[in-house]
Length: 259
Image 1 (cartoon, rainbow, N blue to C red):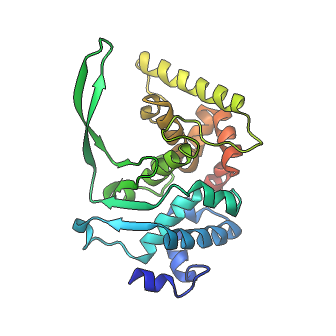
Image 2 (image 1 turned 45 degrees about the horizontal axis):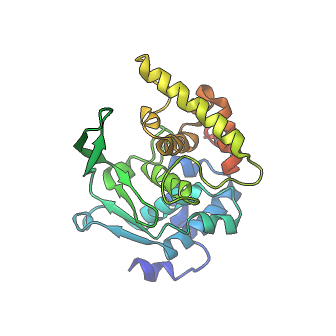
């Protein structure tokens, strides 16, 4: 049914449906009219070109066309400041988004400092891999979209951007010509060192401490903060905020102020 509805207007979503999707999602409602129009077109094509799969247990969940557009809008928000070609290339490794009812677990093997391998159960609200689907929790998706520093979809799609030049996440995505690798490394290294120092001293970090678990997670968490808590990010790490503003070609702090 959704695909039939989608093909009614191939170039852009129905205006009223897109408006409702934005109004449900504060980080989208804060966009300018021109940004809203461009994002709507990209979100519409995103839905047409990517598979969106809901777990069978969600068959009765309230997830309509407006919710689907809100999801696609949040996804395409990451590349809103990029050209159409850059936008398409950035999401070339995104084929499917799978929505599970709630958080899920994975069994992992970790080696400690003595070389002993331990099996641990890791609880997750999202995950992805190089060419694999983006998997997210429905519960956490419904809690995303506001200016509160949390967005599971942006986090997982940041990993996809990260893997644009590597099969693994490493916190070093393909950079535009205007950004030097030296600047990127210097800024993120300083943030990493500060986060690590906070944890060592028992001080609560200014952003989610999950950022200190891995360089790739640091990038994803900082992307979450850039789009959903830019005031906290610029206060804690102004150089990082400016680096991400240059990388995404967006000034998210202005949206929060106008919101």
